[in-house]
Length: 353
Image (cartoon, rainbow, N blue to C red; front, side):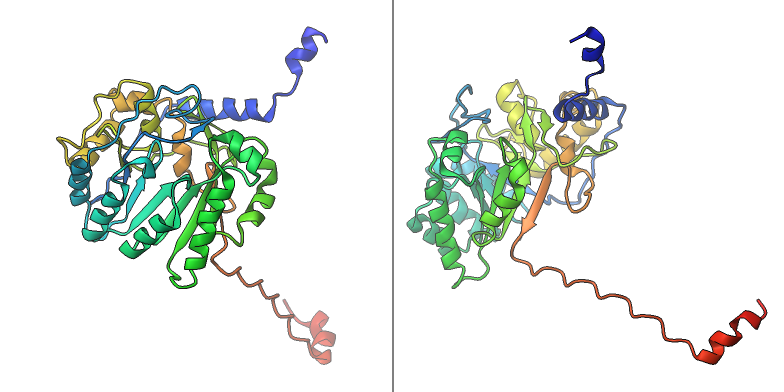
């Protein structure tokens, strides 16, 4: 092949996507935090311990440095008391939530303080007894990370995991939904391997098992994305959402959760000596300051695609398929125009304009 033909060879879709996204991300942009009067999101990633080793995981993957921290219960309670009354609390982990020995204690405390609870897990450690404990507390929202629908492919992605175990857990909740209709079960699925080409098949698989499935673009190298649903035309602001990490550090976003594992982020506020509202205000200030430690990370970070406008129902980052809502009725055709009287049609050419 000649040098000329190599130079003019078309770029692969992945290369073209990466180049365009990088150009948009690094273009001049003035960040502006959408400051809220009070917190509208609070997540607790309580532990980094996990029994799986997922191929893409920066915390417990095959090549990850495992730090295995777990947040002290008194710090979680401190954070829970900072959250406005009635605000939903999201429990997850940079490992798996149910590897935290105090997981159910955290849920119980949140419910006692009047907070609805959403639990995210890979679903390997949720036997019926544990599910019943949470249901008795009033937990109604469950989300599972499941990246394939075939047992062998699933096991290659989430090493040490068993797809049938997750499906049994989901099926149990589905049966309990008959007695407790408020139960909501959803699945997160990262677009890796052959998933992108099989979205309809994956959606069909989940259609009679869960209430919704969320297909996510894949992040890599901490701050980058691939397999987007589309590349936006311009950059947009991120929405500051607080996550308390196993280290006690409070991050403004998912990106900084990963960054905090890979780099020194000692400059982040810590739940031990900072309220969630103080952390929120400080992180908003840092987000708007390009010279701050956070601003320097944001300048090269592509996670802003999570907050881009949607197109045809999709964001660049995510496609959600819901099964708990009836399909919209088909649009009725417009009625035909009324027939003209024969005499009116006959006289039309003679009318003055």
